[in-house]
Every structure is written in C-alpha cells, then in structure tokens.
Length: 119
Picture 1: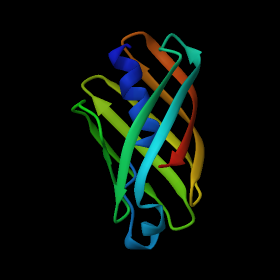
Picture 2: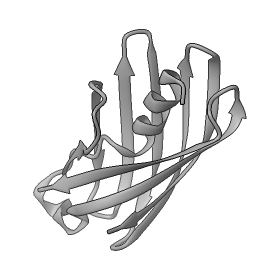
Picture 3: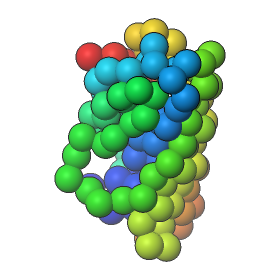
Picture 4: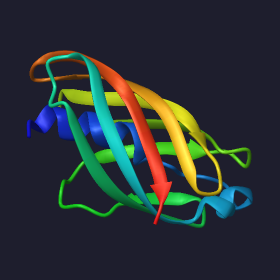
C-alpha cells in the first residue's frame, strides 16, 4: 500500500467533525476507498469512529484531518500529510454512506469513490 493512497483513503471518510445535531451518525464505521483514476492503490478499507459528530481514525497513521457531517448527513473532508493530501465529499445515512474523493500523493493525482457502512 502506498503512503499517498493511505492519505487519500483517509481524506474521503475520516474527517467528520460535526455539531451535536449530527450525533445520529455517531458510532463505528467501515469505509471502503476505491481508486478510479490515477496511480494509487486500487482499494483499501478503513475503520473510523464518530463521537458527538467528530470523527477519529482508528488506525496507526499520524495525519492531519478535518471535516464535517451535517445534520442531513452531508460530508466534507480534508486530510494532509506533508505535501500529500486529499479532499472528499458525500453523504451518510443512518447506516451507510457514499461519496467521491480526489487527492495528490507521491504518484501524482488520483480520484475515486468511497462507501461506508455502520458497524
């Protein structure tokens, strides 16, 4: 797995920081990140936890991420590690979510989609 793809994958899904009204999205989520364009690894799955509308990545990488999930489930995310980074957007329901992402890593630009499911 390339480091640039790890960042991209995290960017899509990871940074859910939300107001208390979005607490309905709290819990553990499994997120599948799929590359559809560019030279990043094809797919990876990440575990994340959302608490009081804020998300934390449940893995070992040390990255800067931020974002939000609105009360209606709209997600916007941003992640950075040095010169690498990615942005994503999408929507969560009570138990699933989907969206798109794009980013820049060591191998250049990549883009794709993400899918999430509550665990």
